[in-house]
Image (cartoon, rainbow, N blue to C red; front, side, top):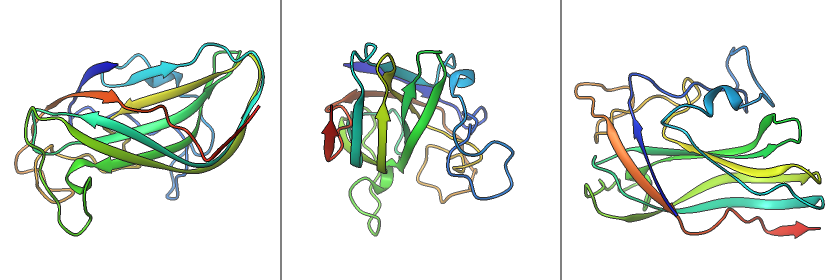
Length: 182
């Protein structure tokens, strides 16, 4: 499966809830529906679950990405879409692409070339009820929780040059935890 979206630093996706530690009004479980219609947010969901599914473990998402920029970032949210339609984020992970192979030796992307990327979404334990959907939200920003980036090799909060990044990606695997109980 392949999708494409454009990340524009001047119009980042706003943070809606989650693990926030500094004075933002919305923290914890907040409905994500207000951002789902944005063109820089991709939303995938399962069919309604016929039975409850419990997930316990470390969640990783493997992507194959490409960009027309030398650097960009990815943010992924594993969510539950409740039968009511509410979309609640259960865990989130992000990674600036220049650190995809090493934190100590950043490497730029080669524009237009595919590259593997693993996002660590952290540990979770939850039961998806029957009738709900497992959903995945992918974007390149989550502001102000994550500082916007310029899609260049510049240091964080440095905006001498700003580039809008066009970023196709393909999921290699669905994010699977260590244990799934049905």
